[in-house]
Image 1: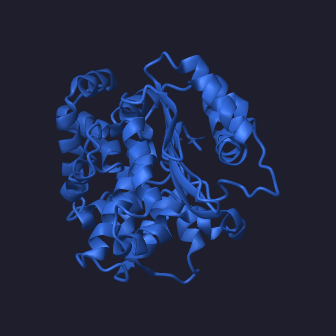
Image 2 (image 1 turned 90 degrees about the horizontal axis):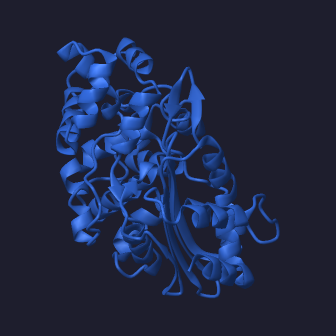
Length: 366
């Protein structure tokens, strides 16, 4: 979900831990509203949906259209984390001082995600294992944890992953938090006005934009941002700057993410060693004992900004039925965002458990 405090968009939603609510208790929401939205926007360049069920293409709308991923892109980070852990390149049990993560945290810019993760830890916790940092990135969607993991794993390694997985639409990642500082950097270094800064940002190549975000990120190793710097950023980031930031988030196609969900769902593409580190983080849904009653395994990650709503998921139920889905939407109105956020979980649940609804989805969205 997106929250707004003091005019600042709080971005990149946390995973829905209560997702796929168990069958004995129907979740709230109107699954038809998701169908209606897709029908109304299928001809636009701001929405894409791909659903596969038991290896059959059920829905395939704008499947090759790259759109901003928001926090859904964190799936790539956790896969690289699991790969490096399996290879012994990183130690998931390495203790990380929570103060180390503070340099990457800007209050009021993540919907309270990082604070919620901190609150979930023991009251006296000063250090946590690296595996818990990864958990906080997926379960709570901490942007600070994400940028820290990019440093630990190496951005260049994360950016090799799409080619390894043959996700050819996937744009390169860059630090999410440091990118928020680009407008202020332009104003202070170049003496630009707000209007000049917006013009510069809109004309700036994506390569230059990424480079600036990475440079800021690297500077923080020796000179982390102070509280006053973070406060200044909050004052700069009005809705116009947030729109530019949102539009420049890493993009990929729904088809690529549905294919990625299929790889995760199969349990065969990645080694057992990789899954031993990946599944405890990625499959937050299985921590709910009610979900374990009817699901063999399942994982998902969603994301949002003030303008974007995305989600990718995979699941295999106890009867062996497999579902993969990727949904990407951009340039949403507040009402559209609220409806999607409210009703998507029910849509997923009905699709997986109700054959009549599943058939109606195929008929209406074919």
